[in-house]
Structures are given as structure tokens and as C-alpha cells.
Amino acid sequence: MSNITGNWDHIVVGAGSAGCVVANRLLRAGRRVLMLEAGGADRSLWLKLPVGYFRTIFDERFARQFQVQPQPESGNRPIIWPRGRILGGSSSINGLIYIRGQHADYDGWERLGAKGWSYADVLPFFRKSEAFAGQANHYHGTQGELGVSELQNDDPSCQAWLDAAQEYGLPFNPDFNGETDYGVGRYQLSIKGRWRSSTAAAFLRPVEHHSGLTIATGVLVSRVLIEQGRAVGVVCRQDGQEQTFRCDGDVILCAGSLQSPQLLQLSGVGPADHLRALGIPVVHDAPEVGENLQDHYQARTIVRLKDRISLNNQVRSPIGLARMGLQWLFDARGPLTVGAGQVGGFARTSNAQDGRADIQFNVMPLSVDKPGTPLHEYPGFTVSVCQCRPMSRGSLRIQSADPQQAPTIVSNYLKESLDVRTLVEGLGMCREIYQQKSFAHLWVEEKLPGPSDLEAFARNFGSTVFHPTSTCRMGDDDLAVVDPELRVHGVEGLRVMDASVMPRVVSANTNAATIMIGEKGVAMLLQDAV
Image (cartoon, rainbow, N blue to C red; front, side, top):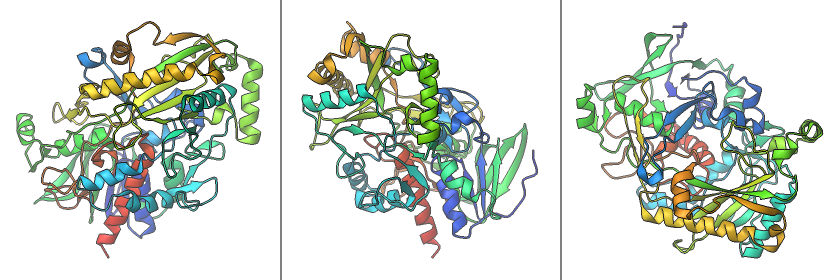
């Protein structure tokens, strides 16, 4: 093992979306930090170029590929969940959409026992992190580190879809992170200038040479070291060797919704009977560690455009590629600055409650089987639909005491009938929007779903939106894994700060909320010491 020595106040496990924020704030408060990351450095150009997610998300050099258990409700298919294994974590490989979810998501968290996590409570922490490219206002901050920009690409087919959606009856929304998410508009992206603004770039890079910071990559944490009911360090593996690191203050897990609960279970914090069966000494019986798993599930519609105006065609043209490169280089605009959705929006099906949108659209002027595979040769256009707040709940459990063995992940996608009914109705909305005046003349054939029954299509062809959450649920009840200050119940000196603590998944992409969790979580930790 490489020589890692020092005295630390805190150990942060995972240099991902939340972990980089946590380390930055601890250092600025004068704390000494050891940051441990199982992946490597984020040096590849594809990790920095906004459109690079298309190349990196299923690349095992940058993302660990977790396989979800096949289930009949989702076509008995082995669905893959990639999670970032690199500095910046999934913020280095995701589709860059910066959206926080609905105000009611956070107010709902508070009602579920996450005291101090209402929308009014969390908004200052969203603003604190944000370097919004527009004007500062009640909803946006401009003095933070995370670059957030408006869409910097003008695509005529995307504009036609926005016009058609308004003809269908959805209002135009100029800012999904403002007063409401309802309606259609252009997505904001985590981009600064022409480059991806991952949390590694935004929060870690400015402090990477800080005398109080030690960053160790390629280090797999095996378990939290717990002595007399208190976390005092971690046990790690690197290059086949084991080493123990200790700290004077809290150990902070920022390993994400799959590996934070895995680490807790490996450390003896989890469902007692399961841990005993694997020969793991039980430190604290916490039956909900790994439970409550939620993820957004999407189904993609694709139409073939009449003219060759799709990105499918532009990337096959040397002139088109040159134009894209020049736009990106000189104007920080164009297709190379886009994420996994250029435009989109939020709508209400007949299942919606309390006036809240319950489906999200992501729109792209291209089509593909999945990221990393070639774009289709025909001029494709894609609109995906996902349910904002699925009712189905899954679970995660370790299979052995070996930290390198992936846990068993059960998604339970579409287990609840409300989930599939909502998704099917959303697909029907997509079809109606395609038929509106502003878009109907642009396309000639529906490639997906085609003649398939919509429920069968959703079950057999849908997939993840890469948003697993809630496996270390926070709350004020005895079964919650962490309390509202993100302290693990049953163990002193141990906190979890990542998407796993969400009581319920937010109603949109999860990265912005995860960064906020790191920002607010570390603020509470520092306040405890005052």
C-alpha cells in the first residue's frame, strides 16, 4: 500500500457528489481531512467535456456497473446501474441536468421526520454551492463553486417540441429551479464555461494542495472501525494490502446509495439476523439499512424525423462535426455542451395528487439504444418519460463479508400498480404532443413504442434514470438509519451524507439534491462543535 500517513480530524469515504463538498467545507473550517476514493483521478478529457457522459457512464474505468436482480415486473432483464468510481463520483459521469426537485419534496421530508429539511431550510444551501451563470435572485446563488448554466444549444426540433407541448396545454417554464417545476422549458446544466462542473472540479480542485487534506485514490474501504460503540476510523484495502486509518472526529460516509448501506452492513450496522448469517458481528441492529430503495424508471419514445436534422446525422458529417467543435471552442455553445436532456418538463397525469407534477419528460434531438453505443443511422428524436415519485420500494443487502462482492440489489420497479399506470399515461401524453401542429410535420414514423401495448412496452423496454436513493433513510423515528443531523443511530461519531439519506426520492434528477445534502450535512456537523 502506498505510504498514507497523517493525523486527521475526519475521514471522508467517497470523493463523489457529496464527498467533495464535505471535504471542501471541513478544510475551510480548519479541519484535517483524509479522503478515500475507490476510483482514480478524473483526468480523461471525456470526463470534462459535457457531452462526454455518453462515453463514460458505462465505462468500467470510470463507473462501477451494479447489476439489479431481474424481476417479472420489469421484463426479467438484468438492468445495470452505473455509479461513478472516480474523483467526483457520479457528478463526473452523469447527464449534467441541474434540477432540485419540487418544493413539496423537502416539505414532505420534514413531515416524515427530517426536521430542518423543509424547502425553506434547504434553499440557502442550494444557493451557497451555486455559481449560477445568470443573475442572482431568491432561488439562485452566484457566489458558490458549482457552475450552473442555462442551455447553450439551439436546436430547432427541440424548440418545435416545446411549442407543441404548449399547444397540448403545458405552460412554458423559464426556470425549473424557481417557483415551480410544472410546465416545459430548457434544462439548466452543471457546466462552467465550456466544461463539466463536477464536484471534483468545483470543490476538490481548489483545495487539493491544502496542507490539511490527504486524498488517497484506489482505496477500497472494507468497514468502519467501531470501538466501544464509537466510529474511530476505517479499515481499507489497496493493492491487496490491508491498512487501518484513524481520526479524532467523525467518520463520514459519502459512498452513495449503494455503497454507504453496504459499508454499514459490512461494519455490523444493519439487519441483525442477516449479518449474523454472514458471520459479521452485530454492532447495532438497524433493519432499515439497505431498505426503502427508490429509483426513477423511464420509458423512451423515439420518432424518425422527416429531414436529416437529427444529431444522428450531424455526427456523421465532417462539416457538422467541425461546426460543433468550433461552436464549443469559440462560443462555449452547441451540441458538445449538452447533457442527457436539452429541453423537457413536468406534467400531471390523472393520478397526480395535491396539484403536483408526477411525470418528467427528457427531450433529445437524437436516438440511441443506450449511452456508449452508436447513434441510430436514421434521423431520430427521443422523449423519455419517468414517474417523479415511484411508490415501489426495493432493497440492498450484502452477500458476504467481502467488500469487493457487489450487494444483492432488488429494485422492485413497477411493483406498485400506480407506478405503471402513471408511466403509461405519460407515454400517451408523449404521443399527443408529437401530434400537435408545431411538431406533427417534422416526423414520419414512431419507432418506439410502435405497435406495442404501452404497459408491456414500459415493463419490457424501460430502464433506470440512474437515481438510486433512500437506503439510509433519515428521520426522527427509531427505525430511521440516521437522525436529521445525519448521525447514524446506534454508533457515535459516524455520519452519512449522500443521496442514501433522502426519506423519499426527489421528483427529478438527484445530483443537485445530493450536493445540497453534503453542504447542509457538513454545516450541521461544524455547528455541533461550536
